[in-house]
Image (cartoon, rainbow, N blue to C red; front, side, top):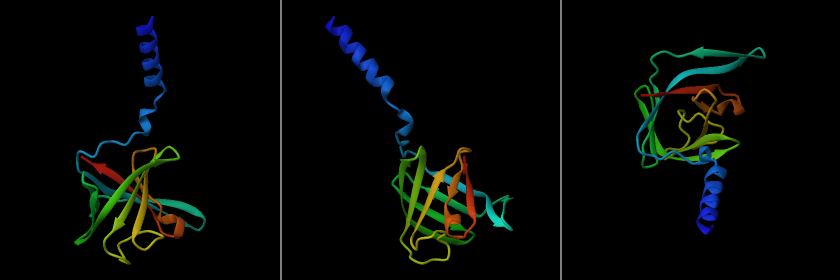
Length: 137
């Protein structure tokens, strides 16, 4: 009887956990390339596809990243989090006030993974384009 109760308790715990809220282990480099952007034109949102983008984020397992835009490169660290059911990334740059930091803040960028699995920027909150990145294999 005691073993049955312990087993039932363990099953209850296992099925009550939401494993989707657990962060993925950082065991490989992730590369995200710009797939497109969205801007507001005369009150309408227009999406533009990008082919062969030279705008790439490389996220390393140690929590560091690089952002390459053509021949220019910025580096920093990143944090992953979950809120409102979304996986979020905060990129923190070692350089300050660079024109390549696309954000409302001066040295950080906030991104999230949208329902299509794209890394999605939040620069549109301060009149910039909304950027979309596809994960590269």
